[in-house]
View 1 (cartoon, helix red, strand yellow):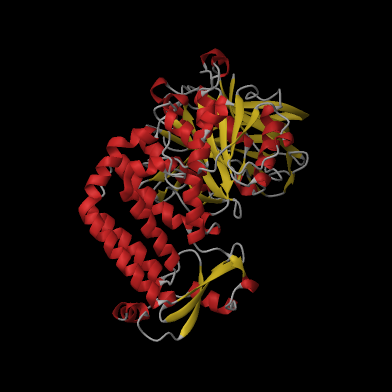
View 2: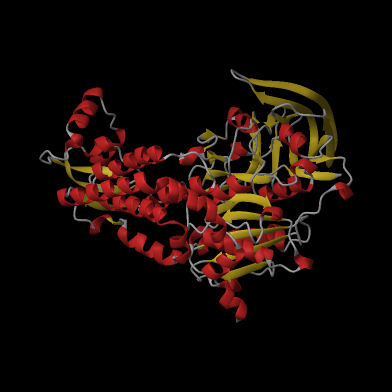
Length: 604
């Protein structure tokens, strides 16, 4: 018998959104502390949920699974219904595949049921109906009748890159120590180790009990540098400690240990043709734990598309939609497991600091991506993390990624898209962001030799100095007006307003007649029509920054923009070809050890 996944409950400190775990109908009482659910007669529990449904079609497609069973720890009289559910274009299709009754005579007993072999495109699940008052469900799991000797040996290094996120790291390590690393009962005990690249050199190693947690003080070369440091350490492991996989995970997430177990079990059962598959985790929001932000990503030449974004995972329809597979080019490194076969001295990530390193590495190496309900992390929404630095990195790295992967993206496409981004920042009076866009594009044109000579930490310092910094509202020269902010958020531009804005170039040459209060996250150009100043407000942090209309800055930016466009017409194809031909010079171990200063550490 091989256990595939556990039936899990809400857990304080991780997730208490009940509808992600079970649905109750009638008189049902859930005891969080003792982890059981008590039902009165004719009350019902359903487990067709994000964490406790079983992704049948994917298990049968990617693994050697041949049969599926469920084991339930029950107390009392129940009717147990085994079901198959699938999302259809206009409805949810459901059918009962087996049904039986049980009476445990007041004792806690394990009651097992078997599902039919195979799964089309949906979920296997089960319902429980109480046939007497006080019937209890205690626990359960899905399993298969398979010889453990048939399993593939799997061990993993969990790699975390962190920069001053001690609170998250300490919490997650305590969870992992308790559930896996220091738990002899865990099947992963001895099969999981943790490498933490500490880019800020601020972690206190004494806070970690397990010897399986290793902290490596690292140069602040961004996420790319931190994750690559972890990969280099995995490559350095002696033969007796070799791992088969690495699991890359962000530092500021909330983890569900069961997700790691399910990842491990999948990897042990993969069919030979899928042995090089990646296993990706979805990203759910920390402030709305039922909200799915991304489940796999599609590059689309740099127009990043987050698959299945916005799903409310409390709903059955959303969970069943997750079962449908769509094209994905990569899985972001907030949770991404990959085989060590792709992690080689001559095949390491690009040194592009942040934004796009995971994309390019996925485009380069990923053949198959397995995504399943119940494998996830919770992450703070990206819109709650405003930074002007992204304007430098996003466009520069997009150009690099497209070039090295030889993705069709012409000079004309570049000029059109860059112009759109650039003008938006100019018309919204955020001139520093416009300069950062220009800096990023110009650095792309400097080519591989420029990149090889750079210190990523120094580049990031200059970028941060050039951008806007969020400040407390009382420190800003303009007063915050909440009603004005709310009107901006609720504003919808009419056809006449849009026509007027286009005719008068958003009023930038008209006499300013107002101060705008706008959100920091991509305010619409129309929000700043004829504005002489803007208070850019970040709702998440309750901070902001102020910008002013400046004709002199607009003229300087226009001149720099025209210079960049001339450079693009002359050099775009040649520079793109150079990045593609010489990329190996900045993705091998020798380069990375020199870049991170690891060579000096090894000599010491």
